Every structure is written in C-alpha cells, then in structure tokens.
Image (cartoon, rainbow, N blue to C red):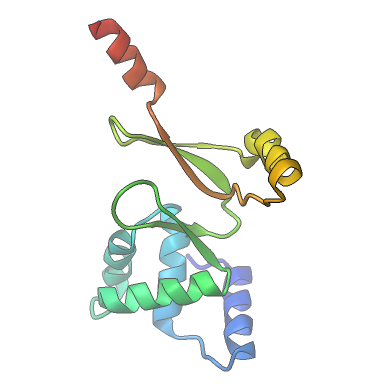
Length: 147
C-alpha cells in the first residue's frame, strides 16, 4: 500500500525536475517500502505481481532515479546486488560472512567513530549507508563449540 506522503513527495520531486509520475515508478517505490530491504530482483518480483510486463531494466533505472532523488538508498551487504530501502530507514547492517545473516543496529552506536574521524581526519562518515562484515554470535558460538 502506498504511503500518501511519500507518493506526494515523489510526484512533487519529479514534477520539479520536469519528469512525470508513472505507475512503474510508484510500484517500485511501494515495493521498496513493503520489502524494507530488497535486491532489484526481489523488487522486480514484487512489482510483477501487479504489473507482469515491467522488466528488470525498468526496475534498475527506476531504483537509480529514486536513489538520485533521495527517496531510496542502497547498501552493499556483501557480494552481489545492492539492497535497497527507503531513505528514512537508517541503520548499520552487520553481515555475517559465515551464515549470511544480516542484523540491524542503530547508527548512533558508531557516534564515537564518527566523532574521531571528524576530529582527526576531517572526514564526515555517513553511517546510515554502511554494512560491516564479521561473524555473528551464533556462528562464533558454533566455532567455539567445535574446537
């Protein structure tokens, strides 16, 4: 189900840039919202439930446009296709390189690092667009038990 505020924001942003709202653009944005984190292929499958003729190329082009407009953002959670989410859905992803699980943590947990990088290096980290790779609690536990 489309969020009325987001639909209005998309229509207004597109209009300001001389573009128009299309059903495909709305369907892609709705799919990203509903799926929360999804690859272009997953988004395509969701969109095709309603509009079977929409192809993966249209999905990629629309995601690129929505990303440039700041309405969605992408994160690389490892190898393969990026994962898309709505812009206000901000957190850091912890990706287990053993089992592939993805866990979310608040961006604020990285505030000390953000401050250090700003002070020491003059670098402003966007922690809302970040995936950290490591080993999850369950996999660490299994490793310890097998030793």
